[in-house]
Amino acid sequence: MIMNGSLLVQKATQDSQLEQHGSILFMYLLPKVPANLVSSNITSTSFDVAWDVVEDASGYEVYLDGLLETTVYASTYAVTGLTTATSYDVNVVAINETYQTESAQSATLTVTTA
Image 1 (cartoon, helix red, strand yellow):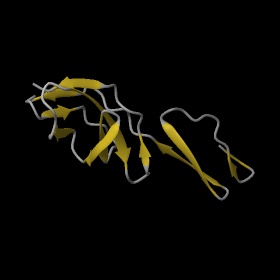
Image 2 (spheres, rainbow, N blue to C red):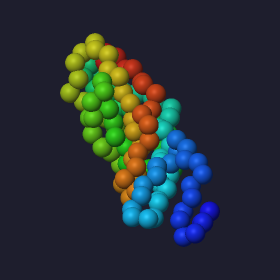
Image 3 (cartoon, rainbow, N blue to C red):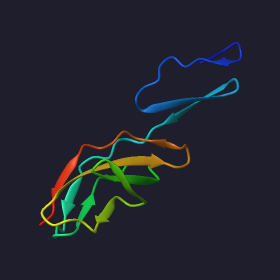
Image 4 (cartoon, rainbow, N blue to C red):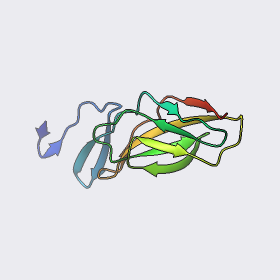
């Protein structure tokens, strides 16, 4: 809605980010949260993790035990260099590099190496 040359935003949701540049207010949509994380190919030192593709995401940040492991541009990642018989927590964040926005973290997937 435009009123007297000003942009009036009535409601911002968790799915958007507001940013003001001078007198112009921009609203960017945030990528959805990655869902359905699954592990496969579990060995004593590695495993693969995959998740559903997120529309409008240009990439994904993969977190291992709360620390950023890497940024990938596909909905899979091979986690390597791990310790035998150890549990790891994996989370994924969808990113949109064009708008410099990101989703909230996915639900945690816990994977134990063999």
